[in-house]
Amino acid sequence: MIEKYGWSDRQRTAFAEHALAGLAPGRVVLQHRDSYLVATDEAELKAEASGRFVHEAREIGYPAVGDWVALALNSQDGSATIHAVLPRHTALVRRAAVDSARQLQILAANIDVVFVVTSMNADINLRRIQRYLAAAWQSGARPVVVLTKSDLSADPEKQAAEILASDPGCPVLIVSARQASGLDALLDQVKPGETCVLIGSSGVGKSSLVNAFLNEDRMATRAIREADDQGRHTTSHRQLILLPGGQLLLDTPGIREVGLIDAEDGLDAVFDDVELLTRNCRFN
Ligand SMILES: Nc1nc2c(ncn2[C@@H]2O[C@H](COP(=O)(O)OP(=O)(O)O)[C@@H](O)[C@H]2O)c(=O)[nH]1
Ligand SMILES: [Mg+2]
Image 1 (cartoon, protein in one colour):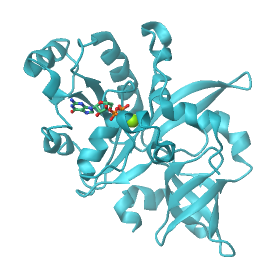
Image 2 (cartoon, rainbow, N blue to C red):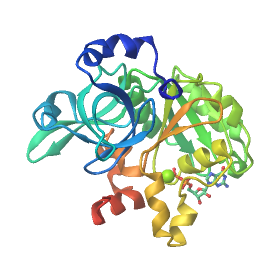
Image 3 (cartoon, rainbow, N blue to C red):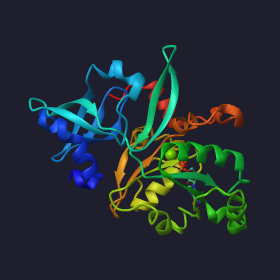
């Protein structure tokens, strides 16, 4: 089961010392406020970070979605404690001010591809794309620009050409979740067992893409939120999703990735309903 989540020789080698200590490997698939859901070889377990992370967080950050972790299993209640995080080969990171200290915040760990998602129903904002691309390159993963909602554009190729002319150094792909077009070309960028993440402003169609890949309405999209279906918001909370083709996909709610870039473009005003939810209610 853990192979499905991308477990490979790289992790096996890094994990050897923890195996000797009697710990079990797992991958963080979902992050709540104070706890995690971790996929292990046998099951998905609720896990909490051990006390030492309070001290280590400034240096390596708290465990995050996508992290490979070393777990002590509690057979009594089926929960687990995270004792260590394996070295990350890539990470989307921001420095957040927490309690007046600058703390490392990991938005997504061990990702192979970053999809920089922007919508074609408005003019292309090259500067914004470049900022997201800078964050993507910095993560160490391969960026891909994704232009969504091609069904709303009079000339999708022209908009793509505009971005290519700015020399992004990565593929630029055109998709429509609504028409289910361009989806295969997108997934071709990610091998089975690799992990990709969607970043981009709220409303550009990230969650709709996840649903299109899954061919089901797993993620809450804007329209659903407007229908006031509160309960569905939680499903869009940064969960690592296994796609039918074997790729792992992470959707991000709006504000998280906005923190990757500074406020010059007024992007700090782009709040996402999901973020409001995390501030207003307790997850567990
Ligand atoms: N016309 C059109 N609308 C889309 C498409 N993809 C998403 N949308 C709409 O755009 C809105 C925001 O989509 P959502 O997936 O929630 O965006 P997110 O905030 O980036 O996750 C919703 O009303 C979707 O129905 C598309 O390919 N074509
Ligand atoms: Mg969304």
